Length: 142
Image 1 (cartoon, one colour):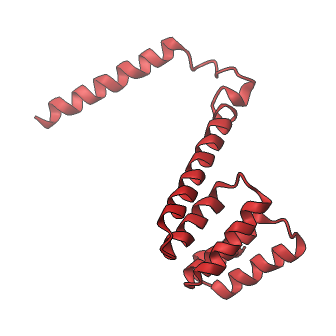
Image 2: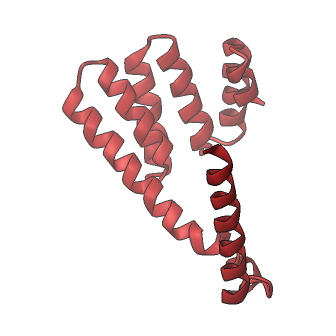
């Protein structure tokens, strides 16, 4: 709910929602990071930095907080620290994508097996059809 309020630029409502989440669960690092984002939007860069550091302390592998910290540091003119934080966030996000990729792939959903229709013969036929359509469109455009 807080994110929806933030998207609609209802920052007071967003903050109240995030603060309620943190009151209910002091370890809610995403809500803390979102409060930091609201501080960043308000131009309160030191408060934004503090919130992101708190989120990182709760969840060191949360890439979003590292990125957001980098933005807060950049706004304070601390370019070197900013670059380090943003790069760390990028590395964490990439690592997360690599970890999630097998689980999210077509094969991962079926215990490592691809769907029956997804075999080399079918892929060759699909490729041939795509090539014929592209060639037809090329000739039609001449």
